[in-house]
Image (cartoon, rainbow, N blue to C red; front, side):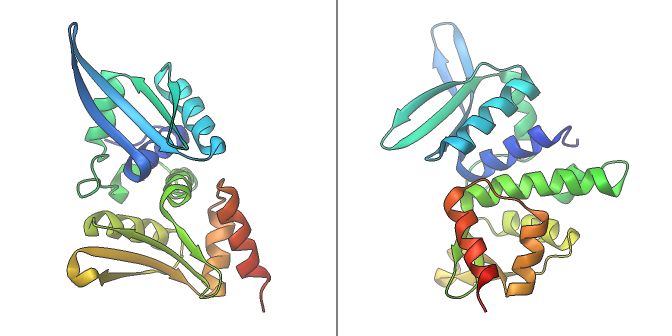
Length: 202
C-alpha cells in the first residue's frame, strides 16, 4: 500500500506527530475518529483542507486549553491510515516503501510533504547550536524519518537518550540545514523564523 497524494502524506505525518486514531463506542455503534491537535491555525486549516480533499471528510474544530483540535469521523480514512503505519507514539511507522511512485519527482514530493508536516509538529530548532531535532520514544519511527531525509540527501543522526527510554534525531550544521530548508518548507511561523536566523548567522 502506498500514499496516494501529497495531502494524504501530510495527514499521515500529522497523525504520527500530534494526532490520534481512536474508536468511540456509541448507541449507534462504533465511530472511527481521526484527530489532530495544534496551537497554530495555519497547520489546523491545512489539515482540514487536506481531509476534505483526500477523504471528503467534514472535520470539526474545538478549542481546548489553548490548542485547536480538528477531528472527523471516517472508518475508511481510519483503516487506511492505520494500514499505512499511523498510530500511537511507540507504534507509528513511515517506511519509505509507502512513498515509492513511478518516478523520483513524485516520490520526493510525497516525502517532502510528509517531512514538512512531521517537522512542523515535532521539530525543535535550536539557533545557538544550529540544530534541528526530534525527540521520540519510537526508535523505528525515527529511523524511517532518517531514511526519508537520506533520500533527499540530508544527513542526520539518531541518538539514544534518557538511558534508552527515548531517542533523538538531529540535523546539524549550516550546510545540512540549508539542504533541509531548500527541500522542506515549514509552515510553523516560529520554526521558520528560527531557521532563517540559523542561515543568516555567520
